[in-house]
Image (cartoon, rainbow, N blue to C red; front, side, top):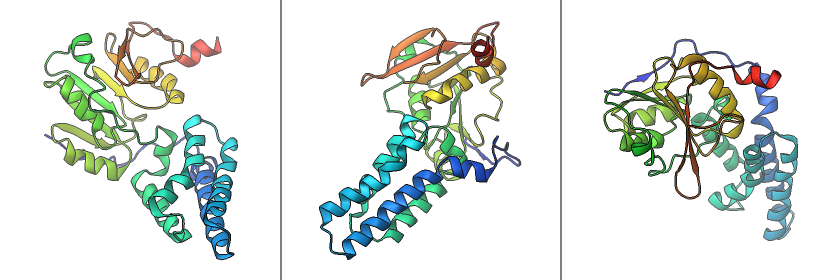
Length: 269
């Protein structure tokens, strides 16, 4: 049975909303909007399409050096070129603002601190079937399930487990709950929701999230349960398995130890 649960009081982020906007995604939104405004102005001044596009793309990409994280810098650099290809380079600036608003509605502010929306490929997890067999009734969670691509890939691997999906975006969680009716989908903060009692937590996050995920898994999951990550490894931790997810992507499997020290404690030593 599939349910979509709305938390009554989600955990507050460490920084206030204003501070988060100043850090991210405001720089990206401002850069993209400036690029579109410049493009519109230059076209009205009679500058050629190619020159206007090139200068606008440069303006949109220029602030990328000021943000941390490769994928964030990549989003800033690619924002104007990709949106101009999608909407046409002569689209008015207000068309980009509407697109940005739709993006924020689908992918809210707090979710931007985690991974961008990259769906799990359909066959990426198949190697887990033989490498990590699970008994019927095991509890498997996709932390940050998006539209449910990871849940469908997990179901193909373990057809008899209890699947759970956690997604902060209300819109994505609503759609996921209807696409994956054989899973329990929650709209919740994956970092605030306890991972106790989960046998396998699956992640397709980003490199900067992995140390935090490992600490949370070690603190809350039972010994001999597993953390599975597509593509990104936990820094400084030896995996139980490194599998081939196809397309040159690794699939990392970590066993939660009986005794552990948190990542912060190891780094601070």
